[in-house]
Length: 454
Figure 1 (cartoon, helix red, strand yellow):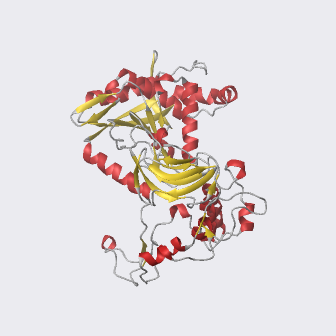
Figure 2 (cartoon, one colour):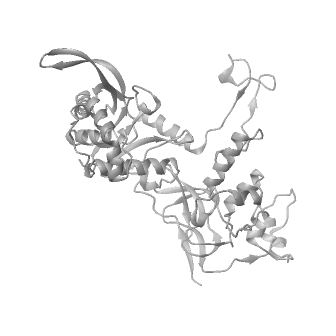
Figure 3 (cartoon, one colour):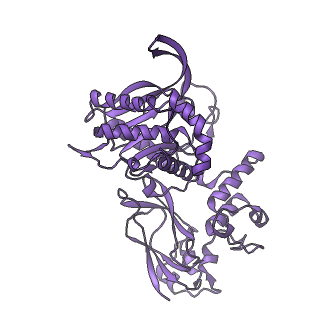
């Protein structure tokens, strides 16, 4: 049988390394092709690396929390092999019982009986790898089940969304979340479990935290998860890097709103895609970037990188409350149908946690829809190393002055605010202000007679 090395794959142009979050299978365990064997994290997204073929993962060359470079080997893998059986002695070396054992003794000792590495290292002795139905359960799923007290009978009742109906980590977390909402004894999803308990501290139990010295009563200290720490650092670095300026424009989008309301059902029937406002707004932004390419740039030291392609990032809130920015690559090459398909696909995969590193890499300009939360405007923070970001406010009916050949009149119009934050090192007020005004012009001049193919 051939023995190969599993390498850390390339994960986007700007990603050079990744951190090992979890080893999902034990050394010596049999795995099937495309079964996830390790969970990794970059500064952009978490993802899993699958087994290349059916076989045995012979040896891990990395450990949890290691930082590994792209292209470096992370494991030795035997294609089509059988599960490896080794003595339990090496496992004993990893157990700290307070007594020191000389290295030569542990290496020479013959320990009986022998057990498989899978049996020795697996923290879950039950449930087994397969249930009564014959369905396979990965080591990660079994570990979560053991930690949360989920029996084999319960596992067998969970609907799996993985290959051949397997229960995935997301299925388990979703099941535990439902249990939490219906049971007084709440389960804590493993994905969100901090490395140390997050204590609820009261003034009667210990000294008040300095940040809350003026507040009486108890409080809870919750450690940020890894993604929130990265977002926090990214935001602080951006504010420290770029002098932010924000220009605001209010746009009358009545024609656009009426056209969408009239054609959204026809669009769904013809193209099989739900037409939201996002692709319509993205289309106007892309057109305006074509008119003012100075905002489609990045800063590299004393150099300004002018990008030829328009790769539009669309900030999206995750169910966890964190933020991610998938990118529509070459957005200027799509018509409305193509933009709608791209927007819907990225949004769906973002909510499901299925975005890969390439999906969030390479953005040259970003839009964020604060109107989703009912906000009329915002002052967004630039997504470095880009030089601009546009916040789209809520669309609201308002009384407005309408100019007609017969004179001015008051009417009810659909209005929205556009908020453009830009890097004043390279984007001056003239460029930043004219750009957002041009976006508004495209929205206001939207043709009510436009065919849905356009």
